[in-house]
Image (cartoon, rainbow, N blue to C red; front, side):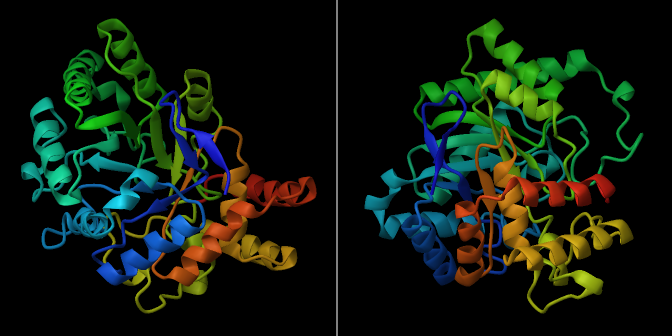
Length: 350
């Protein structure tokens, strides 16, 4: 396993980050234990979770993922020092979490206390804003005019962001978190937060995690350029496009127990004819290379200049091992060119 700096944090994180969002829904505590042990044995030292997990979100299961992680480390306290743990405060929209309100200084204090309790930890290494209070081009809202920025007030947004970072900075000084980061934000969001931090002397964000895969490359190159130049780690989530790039949903298949067999909060917005056509070509190319479709997608993501650590998830240890193995693969220039040729035909298929 190789490692990269997590922005300007001084931390070194594995190129693969262990995602946990299925724990508590598709995975049991025993499954979570096995995945943590396997990941650790393979050199992974970075784990990502969130207060709203597992996915799909539900009032009856909310917080289960953090509780499972906390349960593991309560039984293996000596391993806590080997891990960089990241969690997230949920944004507006889930009525069973703080009545669906957005992120505020008060919400941060409440959510952080809850996450620390569930994780059974004194400190979270990286605490992230799950999505901005303003509506942004994420979670399928990336069509033209789907988000109308002209309806938003940047002065109001910035004022709210000041109070958010003030609360995060206070949490750092209190020792409750070591660093903070963003998720599902934009170049404007990154630069506005950086401007605020410089103006007020607050701690700078160290990372941003956004959806990024062969089927969803909207952050290349503009947001990634901002990350590289501002020393903010870029962390792709859903590098397999919710599992679609594995090929298991080809021809509208729904394997029992797979994510697409469960209710989808935003609908299967990835499942378009163009996306299916792209996956068909990527699967055929992976077979030609002698690797699995998931490994092709992950090795490609890992090869993108500016990517720091890719968040991977699995519902079995065999899937997890398959995914981890991708990070030891080096795609040749010829292989990258063949992938690029497909991507040019389907740059944003959903």
